[in-house]
Image 1 (spheres, rainbow, N blue to C red):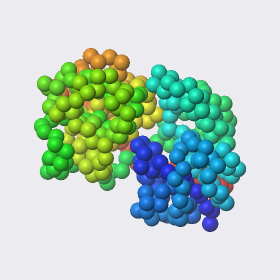
Image 2: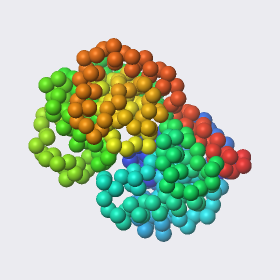
Image 3: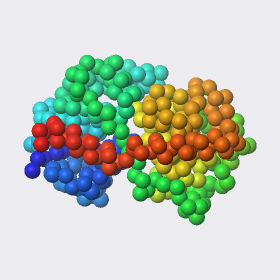
Image 4: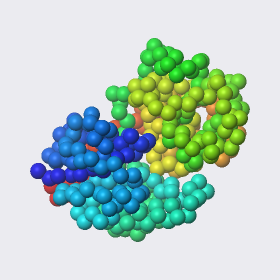
Length: 358
């Protein structure tokens, strides 16, 4: 049986973590004719129940990661991020989610880190037998930045776990709101609090409409937020609720009870929270940019992330125009048919098989 190793060190880290966990969960259901070796923290992987776990905790982007990468005698390695082991000589599949570190110098200001990211991504694309990316937009960004053979890259959309992310009942919503001290209505933001996520704009827009919306709920890892957001402490109040760790059932309830998901990011390779919100019957307000036009079509409300007034108008339009809200939600049924982790996993397994000639 062919052996496939998967680097799972980022399984608890944001969107990439969701990607890794969901693939492994679906692989277990599908039970493909491969033997899996999972590289990562044994404790974090203990509940996966798929294949052999190889302990490996080296930080990503580190020298330790490169010199300490386990010596593998496998048929294929899948790296879910571009931090590949540069000395690995076997068949390689890499997932590249976006080019944020390269194309957003205004947010990633360290020139050494930007050059390092570009070099690593170039190396990953060069060494990969095939690489996967998460949207046609991301593929076009990669094509503009790097040279590679025309059939090397493939788009496979991430999915949504529909058994978890669905419209929850009022009692579930109220229970989660009570647990986190959320009273009355709320705007929701979900995502890692990185500079390009525009959390500054989210908070400033809420401050200008808080008489119309009782709370802003921010879900995500927010280390460093205090130093990045201007006048952060002046923005704090009882009606801004920060939640750093939450399970998926609680998150689905928060999506379901929100007035909207506010997601005016400056850059995304895909934007999974917007799809999860739609699955829970909540309208996403997103930035008007190509990737959201691609994946959401008309199942959202577009705003200009650089214009606070545009964000505010979007919030107020959605609150008071039920016809607009219902129109967007009716479009969601058509859009959501494209997204399922079962589809993502099946197509990814097909890539493995193509690479292995199986």
